[in-house]
Length: 447
Image (cartoon, rainbow, N blue to C red; front, top):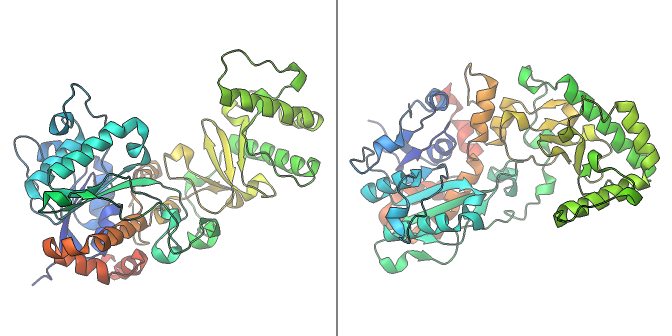
């Protein structure tokens, strides 16, 4: 007879299963998963033995809810604009959005705990209306929710708590089912956007903490000829400036090659935004101070020629006292090249912006990107193309962050959950602080 799980959960907008890794590791059993992307669903099934390919709009709507009973609902749902027609509140304003389909499941099955994850902007001023609709509809459904956004990032967790060197700020909305309407307003969020256990994120070291691979054969990690050219050129620029500025670090404002003009020739057009006018002045002053060196450098590298597009004539130096560009982590952005110290990385996004590891002279590999999201070492993408893998990882959740959030929300609402889902409380309380400890043990099961 199979062992009864501590709790059950459903995994909505499941992607490749970051939520599944965390909740499964905590002792839960997934009783329903939904993912509309065929490639992501295939990877989910490959690793978790469950095919999530389905359309939530077909499984939960006005006509029916095919999703069965469960204890915990998790969803990293897309944030589509909510309707603002009319002055009504509540259900009428959520129709036409994927949150509305989630709400249909919540109202029909009434799970003990809900965990929704989304980009930080959902709780920002531009989406204050949408945020309020979510809060109010959950409270109307008898769920205890804090109106203050709870934002967290895996780089705030120390390695021994499952943290990862990645700035991935996400808003986590937690809701706990209650019977008393007077309890639906929670005054405090279950966690804060602060480093945990006194951890200093500046202590992250990619080479040892991720860790970086000794070697990788992935073609997707290689730099193009033009990328090497851009880095070599700017690397020489950085070294020249260190020498000329006698150890003074590069300025923190973006260096715009197209804005390098002698101060006496600077003309700022009326109506120029204040931020842009400020950068134009600072760049003119910087250029004027180092004109001879910059001119020689630009001529040598044909900086204003066709091989340097406008976006590669910009450098944003956030690497403090790093001696050169090759010792930094670089991000090739539409707004320019950003360089920072090799501590923690920017959030994983599309393959075109995958971080470049200067010391390794390559991009982050898919294996390293999977580690960055906290997925276990045995997690596999099979024979899938690397472009799809990067994209799926960029759309995923941080396993360590979810683990931490679950620990904190259960701790805060333990007395309520002991009555509605005691198995969840037992499972979370006995689980180690580090999800890696559990997920490593699952290697024998998976292989």
